[in-house]
Image (cartoon, rainbow, N blue to C red; front, side, top):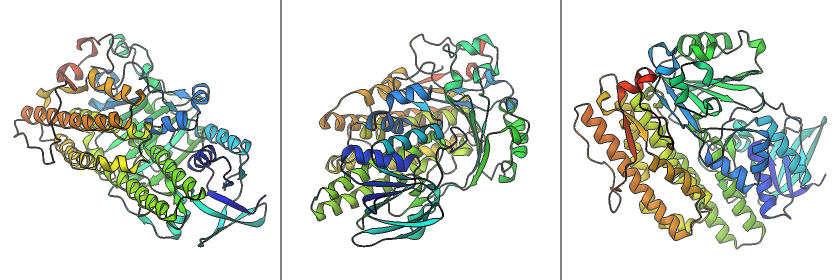
Length: 554
């Protein structure tokens, strides 16, 4: 083994391995070592949580790193996000308001067996000539002005080596985050448990009602990232290519104390009470599970992730926001792309002042992204008591994500700081409008708000076509800038439609926009369809037939 490297990566999980591959791909002569405390290979399924990935992470794995064919062959293609709202004990899935696609989007995405994926990535790292040390926990890190020194334990002996750049990808352990006191809290007081069972849960078999089954004619609900939601909680059901299922319970302790979910017997009893259809398909004994894990207050932030002292944090070693919408690996994809850009430039001899400027820009941009996404999550689980509030929130959150961050990433613009700065006035609208809408969702879910006459919101086919097609469309910088500006105008239109309709239905004054209205105002487009409330909450036989070429259940 060499004793000096250009880049040392602490942590051989998804974040560290993909960082190594992206660095080597963009600068093949880079000398890289990856240090992993666990011994390879990993268990294929019962290994790590985070089996569902969002579109930024999917694009990263498929297009940036080139694993499209591998994912198609070895992991389960998913049918988007799907939400089932609570209704009368939740023992009849056909009476629950359902938000989900009736056909797959063109943005291919997957459920991952995490151990299987990381075993593959480890093999590729080794095949491409990088050093990979498994079974080697880090015992000491010494940061220095020229070369950092890392000491690991391996095979009963201590081994040390040096590196110009140090990347911390040690997950929640956060070696550098803790060593340097970089961690910050997050205003999200939520707990979670999760486990893998050896059998899939076929959501489509939860009812034999033909009218309900025909609402999703492809019969593939079970391949969605399924979220079963109620007041103060959501439960994920993620089926995997290995034949197993990942189930997680995320609960606000104000509604559901941690004691109810911290052990499998307790959480199984809790599921029988709140989600009996899920409980009926699970093992009776914890001994029959593949694993069981839990965590309290899972969110945390970070003051700095890129340093002029030539260290970076990536993945959960940097920060973790929330499991809803599966954005954890998005932060990894974006973080790795930023650190790869700046490390490559520094190693190639770019002037120090320019490297320092990029590091500061990237750090500011990454931390601001975390802050910009934060308003969607504190108190979110209270919203899930009401199907209308749930629907408006899910549509809003996903529209903003697909319109802006996904396109900036897919078009390679996140490292183009002059371009991002040129849009700062427009992008500056997104935080106040999002904060305002999140407050609205919580208000609409309160027991004294009755807006049933407004109907149940459904994203229009026009809106979904835009969300799904724009990331696949080639755009130059001028075209991308126009898309971002038009997207922010669409968000304004979406906001006014939701706020006006819900307020008027509840007999409340329609509030004026408490944010800067985008230049040009909104757009003349129908972005929402409002389905009749009684039909959507009644027997499926009474509901409107689905459009043959539609996208979303009406």
